[in-house]
Length: 458
Image 1 (cartoon, rainbow, N blue to C red):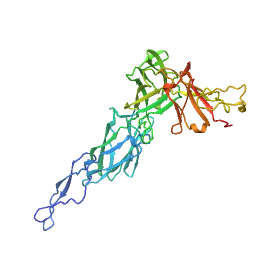
Image 2 (cartoon, rainbow, N blue to C red):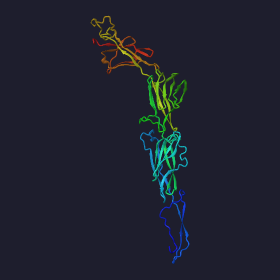
Image 3 (cartoon, rainbow, N blue to C red):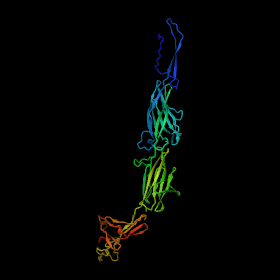
Image 4 (cartoon, rainbow, N blue to C red):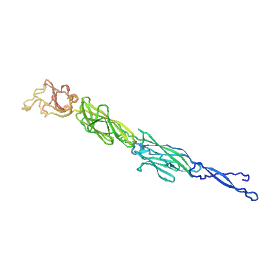
């Protein structure tokens, strides 16, 4: 201006040397003076210094994901495996053009998946939108991160990450992100991504068998309510089992033990316990790595001490990153109930009318019983008790629907007298106190129940 003053107005950004932050750029503008009659002075430089503006990332939205939402995870109702967020940035005069991960070092050193190291790899860029993957040495992607130029981002969990603590612990990846403006200035921040560990779950179960009954199998990984198998995202298997304090132990290849490690393979043992003072093999137990357990009881077990032989097997499962779950398998072997081996009576009409039973009319010549046995017909009833470990014997004998048998039942007392059994509510009952029985090993025979058919029934 004529008064020797001057004014400089900055109307747009000026590129500064890349990556130097708030550095200064000086413009030397040559100035000369001209008088009224046209004389011009020598020029001098007017220095104008412009300080570069730089971007700033104030905050990053933290992301949270859970391994139990993976296809192999334990959660039945899956949530999304992708989480999105955005950076709160001050772009500055030069405008931010991209967001990238700083891969100059190893920002996730020590992070593993299934024991293999995970490395961050840039896998693509499109219009300044950058894509990265966390990969194992075989190229398998564990997660994918997309950083968009507009400051939004998306993290997708694709596989498991090893967690170092027992249970559903948290692993946070602090991913170093930097924003770059038009003239190359950068600003950085850590993007926190927290991943919850999935764990295996095995459930308490029970097996009840009658001695000598066949094998029963249960699956401990199966949720008793939802029905799905909860192996967990890290993959798990049964790793050990042990005996409770009921006095049982396991025998395998002639070796006695109370704890068995599966070591990656199915194990078959025989359960032993002292019964009535005798070391007894109770049955065969098969424990499989996939969570299925089978038990088959032996026959003729001694139940002198109790009606059932009860014990518990403590089971442990372990997943790929060391998380464990425990459960109890309760096993009960009950005494076998007695079974009827033979139950029949063979007679002919008017049999039993030889006068031995008071109150019945005797047979006569017209009955044509000459040469036939006219004594009452003995009921042939033989019971298989299977074993006599609990002093088993016959008790009350009940005959239902007595009126349909077309005759009368009697029992013979110790004096040789026949006593009629009177129906009550359609059934006749021989009281156990009146039973006469004989034993032959595990079989017992009723010796004093008789039948007399109705007169002239046939």
